[in-house]
Image (cartoon, rainbow, N blue to C red):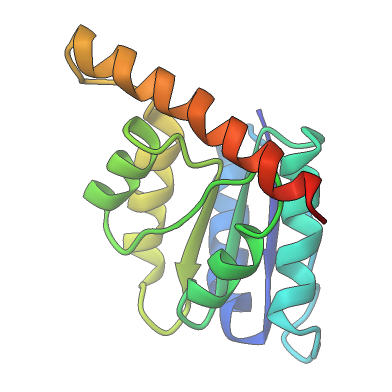
Length: 159
């Protein structure tokens, strides 16, 4: 699995902890920024680069970290094929994968401790789409993703 990873100034320290954790697990990481705590790259630029990598399937998933995780999610979700979710606990991470098939996890450096972030990341990485749901719900979730793909085609065709 290849993870595209990025942060702004407020998420830098947490991004570094997540990056080391992923590398320790043998996961390929493409660190798309920022590279030091003094960088001033705005969150929306980093979110765009990571979202493009995930949306174009150059990375299987992405992780973004800013102050709240919310700004990164807002920007990332403006890209086709991207389903970014702000997760502040492992339960939210599990649901974002099993129900919504999120492919970008966003975290908040102001909100989430490194210890909590690693638990969130592990849950998010280890949960598959539709995991834990009965067959009828799994089918409904699969169909919903097809419907969402159609909505994306209609929306992005207008641009």
